[in-house]
Length: 179
Image (cartoon, rainbow, N blue to C red; front, top):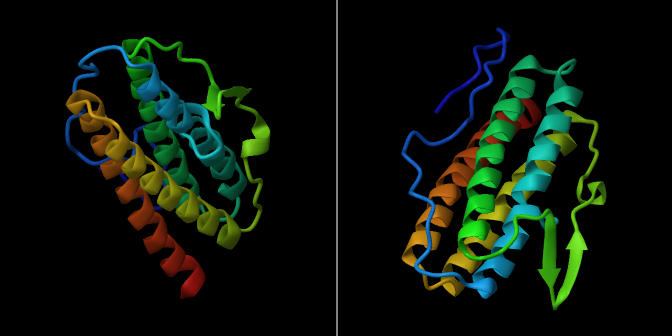
C-alpha cells in the first residue's frame, strides 16, 4: 500500500492492497453478468462515481488537510484501476464498456448527479466511508449472483482494495474528526 508522506508532495500512486490483480477473463460471454457489472462500473455507487468523487474531494480538501487530500487522490487512482478492470471484464462478457447502467431493462447514462459535493472534512470523510461500505456490499451481492470463478476472482480482489479504503478512511475520520 502506498501512503502520503505527511504534507510532502503527493505521489501519483494508487492506494491499494499489495497483491496482484487476477487476469481479466471469463468462462464465457454472459450479458446478465455484464448488467450486474454495469452497476459497479458506472452506476450511482460505481467506480466511475467513486473516482470522480475522490478527485473532487482531493481538490476541495487540499487547503484543509494536505495529508487527507493526498490520500483521497491516491484512492481515486486505485478506483481508476478498478474502472479499467471492470471495463475489460464487460468487454470479455460481450458487453460494451459504456458509462451507463441497465436497471429493470432501462439504460441510464452516468451523470454528475451521482456525486455529492460535500465541503467540510467531516461530511467528505463520512460520505466516502459510506460509499466504500456500500461498494463492498454491492460487490459481495454480485459475487453471490455470478457463477464464473474468473469474474468473481476479480471482484473479490477489488473488494480487498475497497476494504482497505474503508478502514483507512475510518482511521482518518477518527484521527481528525472524533479526536
